Amino acid sequence: MDPLLLGTMAASLVASFFAKMAEKAGEETGGRAVDAATGAVGKVVEWMKDRFAPDKEPQGAAALVKVEEGYDSAKLQNALAEVIAKKAQHDPSFKAELENLVNQARESGADISGVRQNAIGDDNVQNANIHGSTITIARAGDRGEPHSPGRHSATGN
Image 1 (cartoon, rainbow, N blue to C red):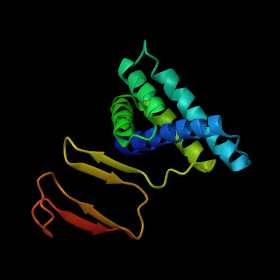
Image 2: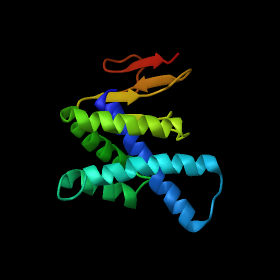
Image 3: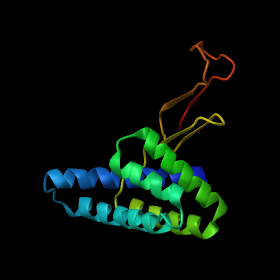
């Protein structure tokens, strides 16, 4: 799996876990599917906390704490995804372990099908599992003219 996609998926799972925990703090929810998904996602979160311990990976630890506090912030999720992607790119065992955990979470029912990533620095935009959708990519400075240089449109199948 591409490190950027893996980072995006993992950051999305982490944010969804903290959102579920906030929801459960307010009310008791039931259902085995929710508990199973939260359990598998919880394994991803615990593994990430261990791998991004402050004494091992301070940047990763800080990104995790920020997502825990602001789980609904796309900006914070993207920052965490970037840290994860960089680590996965340079550490094959980290990448393999995380990929396995993300796949386990997916198999347990965690919804990570609507993942979207914007990487502003080098004009990368990545979408996963987009079917029957229109994807429009625009660079900063585009004025929205159809098919202007730097503007592309694609339809997923």
